Image 1 (spheres, rainbow, N blue to C red):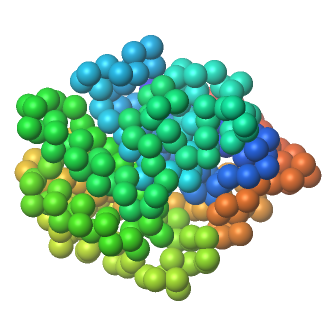
Image 2: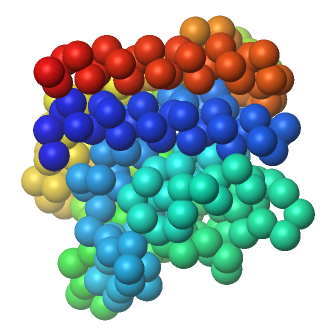
Length: 280
């Protein structure tokens, strides 16, 4: 799949995020939008998965450690065919299988229930170790927030992964610079993120999280790296694609009202039209 095709899918994923959070009147759009390009690349290019057989034994595993960005995960999975796109607007509604955080018991294709920050990466590390012990070739991917890596459990998991040379593990940090209380560097600075992972015996790659050439190259490099896990530090923009949400911590965890929804969708329609012209 070429970059233009991926950009167009990512834009549809962003529309799904806005539609679902608006419908729910709750949720986390900012970090879902910043990671939308990563979700798109993972589900449409990188992961060895089958929407028709979500429990396929040798599938790659993905753990959304920053589970509150479920709207982004759900939108990518829906567009990939795991469940109907129309179901996205049932997010957080009573009786819906699309809960506010991913649940492996109810959502086909979700490999781990998550949402307690810092814990998802430990589950991913366990999956990667299990693959090694069972002599399986599947790979394990996990996405963390940059605010999330303020949790100590993240670094316990990193130490374990580095010690056991889990080269089938890719830890991705969505470094959009903002968390619920403001700038991560002001709340409790995790910087330098890359040097910290290097100290735990990770191969580290810094990328622009909205550049598909860099995303593609990073995952290729991760696959080629032997004897150590890989950490991809994805430098991104919180709220990417929606004018009034970009770079604004206020949109970490609230839903747009009707008027804001119209503006957000208009922004994304405009991006889609520009991509169509690029294709032509």
